[in-house]
Length: 75
Length: 162
Image 1: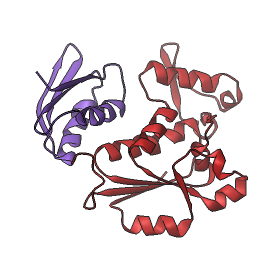
Image 2: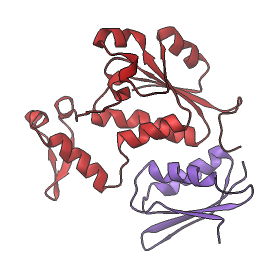
Image 3: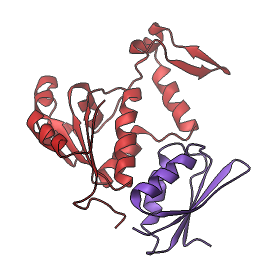
Image 4: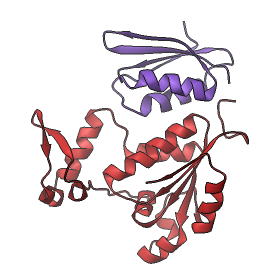
């Protein structure tokens, strides 16, 4: 289970990233954030977001049109 | 910290020159995303772009300047004839379409930009030209001119003109 989970299903760019950023503030250091999304563009965007912010993208999955990302807060 | 805005953070500046609904999106989408990614962001609003800072937004789409724009309508993509831009209801339709598709409103993005400590500069010359008063604009903006922007631009990793 992630420390914090946010649901951005139905939202379009850049809202999944903006809400993830907000969600990360609630996550303790080295904790995890789960983000759910239906935006196909969010796959590449969460990779770029994590590379740039220095957080770890631990998992990126898709099931029935719903993308889920697990981010470890490192920075 | 992931809050960014530390001194060694990357930075982005942009000049925002257009104030329509469609042209209002790119600057605010990029500014809020860059801020979320830890960049220090500065937006310099000038000419028609300054209207994006008004407390009460009343933005329209610029079909007139974009004859190639094809909007999804009635199950297909239809080019908007230039005269469409002058028909009442087209702006409301565009706004409704964005909401249905989970696209943020300009107001929502602008609020996020302010909350993310994006530095917002209103062009003094444009204020004079269009006879806007600083109190017509959202709180949190500062007033500046070309030199203010240039100084910021020389220190920025990314500079955009939109």
